[in-house]
Amino acid sequence: LLENHSTTITHEKLLENHRTFGKAYGIINSLFLSRVGNFTCPVCVGAVLTCVDDQCFLDGKVSQIKYTESCRALSEAKDYRTLLQLVRNGKLPPITKTKNYKGTIVVEFQATDADARNDKSQQPQPLLWFEFTPKSSNLSINTPSNLKKFQDRNSFTHYLQCPRLSRFIGLKLISSSIGSVNIDVCSIGASGLILQT
Image (cartoon, rainbow, N blue to C red):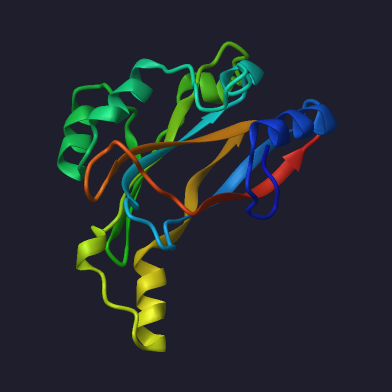
């Protein structure tokens, strides 16, 4: 569930929030993601998914998400050029906004008809795709100004062109700078409004 601050979410925490908030929905206005940390395999490419259906992420394992065709296509989107080809071929929704945050490319997808209808049978839908500058091209952290540059290149806050209604958000880690077996991320957070129904 969406909160006005970033927090570590476990399966138990999701279930607790689900019971506490009942049928609360969030209107996502912005998303924050960070890979700042002492990681061996920081995420390079990933995507954020949204869903209004309880069962999308509460199947017993948060890591097992029911995928639509477009969510499966995200696995192929390991770089910006491939992402654009998948959009042209209709495998991913049209792009609403593309932004470059000091080397990190963030692509926002258009909401689908299911998003607009708040269809309860809806499966997870792609909201954002992102590609960080590979860690090897970042500066060494030996001065305060280099620390700021390091943080800027390894995190972003994206303000949505079109706020999105959602109950849950999911993070798909596609690849790291050295492959896709083990991928590290520090945190993800969403800001917006909570609607109680």
